[in-house]
Image (tube, rainbow, N blue to C red):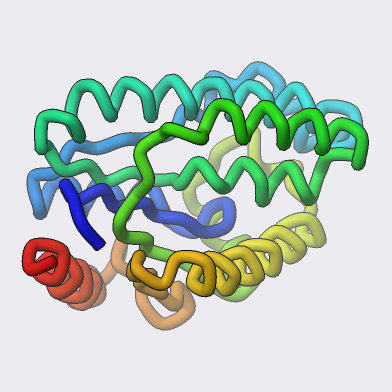
Length: 212
């Protein structure tokens, strides 16, 4: 693990990625990268009819995340300014595999590979996971109207997809530390002591980054 600190936070919908990114950004004084969600004009339709609107939704997210990473690389990482992001661009493949039919997924994957082949890669991952009940509770608490039509079965599938992906990620990238946070046990939004535990874990890995 080398280079300017670039932390990516991942996990299922509603798990608290943005909240944690904001708190870590404030604590460590890192630049904050937040993905664009509400601006996706297809997202509401996607939650109502996944099969019909999946390709448009995923292409919008991919293009916007590509542009964000391109900008963050030029403005901050190349100038030795650390960044914490509330997503890893590889999440595109998690969602696309779940929602796109085979023919469209093949086209999508080709575009994804071309766009991301020379993009900056995070050198630390924080993976937030939790039970379906906790995920549903947090989605309800934050009250995004656009998310109220999400089916519980889709969220359950997505949570398993994330688990499978992160297990594979650790095998493929043994040099990139993955900090796993159990959202059923740690609520860093409501309990400061839980946030402190996470900050300590991140600090330990940042020290190792500096040593390397």
